[in-house]
Image (cartoon, rainbow, N blue to C red; front, side):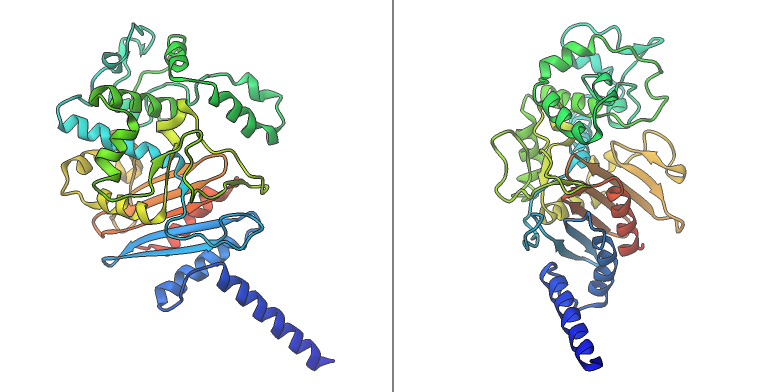
Amino acid sequence: MKKVTIILLSIISGLACYAQEKLSDNKLKTRFDSLVNSTVSAFMNDSSRVGLSIGIIKDGNSLIYNYGTTEKGKRKTPTANSVYELASITKTFSSALLAKAVLDKKVKLDDDIRLYLDGKYPNLEYKGVPIKLVNLANLTSGLPNWMPNNKDLFIKANPDSIPYILDGLHKKYARADLYRDLHDIKLDTVPGAVTRHCNTAAQLLGYIMERVYGASIDKLLETYFTKPLKMKNTVFLAEGKLPGALVNGYDGKGRVMPFIVWEDLRVAASISSTSSDMLKYMAYQMDESKADVMLSHRSTNGKPENGAIALNWKVNVTDKGVRKFSHTGGSLGFSSYIVFYPDQKTGIILLANEAGPTTQGALISLADKIIKP
């Protein structure tokens, strides 16, 4: 009987190893491969996890690892070209455009945003202090996080229904609606004084960049990022124009979630990309010999020693005095995290097609364990 038990345990162990092998493309050839594998395995052991793609720049090399599946219930391991929603990492592209516009002398960071809005908005100031372009990019605009600013919709709603309420609401909310509702905003603090997340500010910044450059945000993305950096699989999502390699996104309960194809939050959250493409974007962001990159990394809200905001990038200094730039992303069905250390030319991007309540925090912890500058 003991011999039979040992045989059964061996079979089960073998099947487990086979399953793990088939759900990852990590070749386990180096110590670093093993470090990534052991760290990611702990992350993937959570039953809510679905898939994970990781891109790393380290010691002059670009590395990509994939785990899990692109579709729950199937054995389809992601690849370097699997497409994920970047969610709020999208904001770093519009703020990079802002830096370019400043250097092109098209705008100034301290410009009143009303210079770039049609009509009069006397309400977009507080005690005589207007919202400036820089406030749109460093979380200090004072604008509501969401537009329309209707919290009553969610007070009595079943939590499980909220993603679908949001999807239904924002699919009908157009640019004209946002500009109309801006007239009703009442600021309750001086712009620049309080830091708080704001999708509305990011969206307005994107619209202003379109106006300044006289081109659509899609064209600006292509002209300044995807074409020169050869990011072939990076686009803004749009209804009816989803990339073929776009993976399914899930909530923490394993339900397939709607994609963010909302016009009103497009520039704030709707770029989709791959680990391969994001390695190119991260390399661009680590090259501070470029004036636009250096400007977008300059702290505009707070001090790095205590945590600061540059142009949408969070800026910190590690215990060893190393500069750290990061940004998180979270949509209805996707979670993402990018962090890099330009002085070390080291960074990591993590893309997950699952958005549970603990996923973003787990991705941050995962990145810190894999990359230790």
